[in-house]
Amino acid sequence: MHLPLANSVAPRVVVLPEAASTNALLRELAGDSVQWPHLSTMLTLDQTAGRGRLGRSWVTPAGASLAVSVLLRRLPSDADARGWIPLAAGLAMADAIAEQLPDDDVAVKWPNDVLVDGRKICGILAEATADAVVVGTGVNTAMTASELPLPTATSFAVLGAEADIDRLLATYLRALDTLLSALSSSPDAITSGLHAAVSRRCATIGLDVRVSLPGDRVLVGRAISLDADGRLVVRSEGVDHPVSAGDVVHVRPARV
Image (tube, rainbow, N blue to C red; front, top):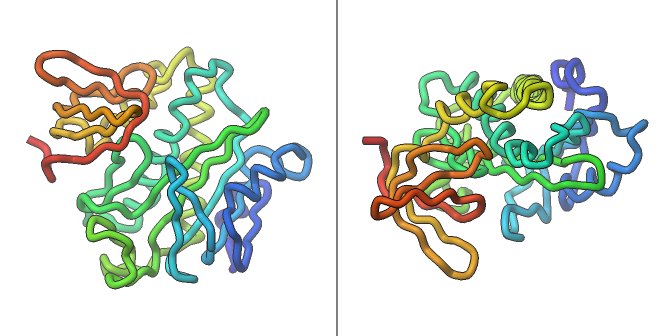
């Protein structure tokens, strides 16, 4: 695969013909900061044992999706600010996808999905190492309607488009690096502008949601905002609940 644009942004881009999990492979190599500097990227069109949040499997037909993992070393010194990394990745990928699908509504679903016209086209998984973070994304590119894992999913092909993978990667990597650089050099996500940018792209804000929380608890209410730490604020029966982790279902398909 020829990726001149991506190679102009990242110091190292490795394309694998097949991989069990690009995130797992890059995490194993992350200890070598010389060979694998900041923004090193590993990708494949055939991931056989991918993982999503909460240990869920993510497997797609060969050639139907893009699995890409990025090694981040220039991190915010404040550990709490690192909770914004998955949201920054979601925003960067949403911008990259929107560039190629200008007539569609591309948005971020809190905390780690990218939606096109309300359907999932990309999932994100961030994993920390001793001194870095690996951010993995899976983008449905050539997947047909019959290959989609859920009726709530979509792909470039289903939308009648052919993904330009080189352009997608270059735009994503450049945006992700810019967002994290601003976050690292600012006191917080609000000052850096990341909070406002993610909030504008976030489809979850303004919707009624059902959130499955740890301990088999369920929170139902209206998602009203993101707080300073990137948590989703859900208003239920007049009380605001900041949610740091949970599976979110959009009860209504559109904002009101």
